[in-house]
Amino acid sequence: MTFEEMQKIIERMLSVQRELQESQLELKERQLKFEESQENQKFVLDELIHKYGDLAEHSIRQREILDRLIGYSLTNESDHLNLEEKLQALDARIKRFENQT
Image (tube, rainbow, N blue to C red; front, top):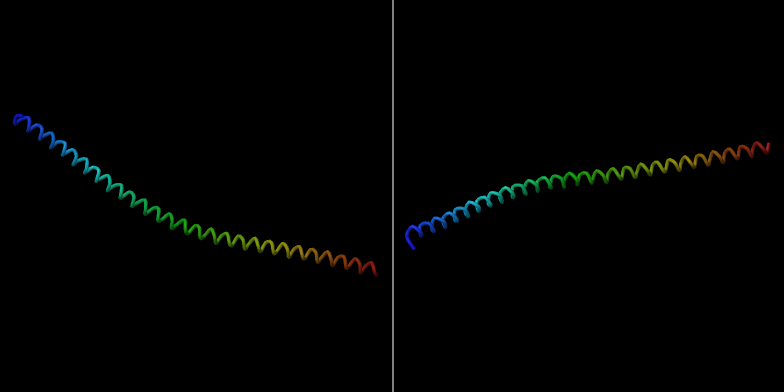
């Protein structure tokens, strides 16, 4: 093997090594960008989890208020029904009293 052939082989080896190093650098840069992207996504997810936790608490509170209002409404209706029954009973008494006299 001549000196020139060895030199060409060495040049090709160095070229391959340079390409490999460049591709490794590109890969590292992509990994760094990916890690940054993951950190940003983690931050956004943490914010969303916090906001949805607050929304869940508000939803539970609103449900409790709604249940309470429904209870008040039902209680008021039952009171109204009791008043109607009492009025009907009173009317019946008045009619009986009038019939007796």
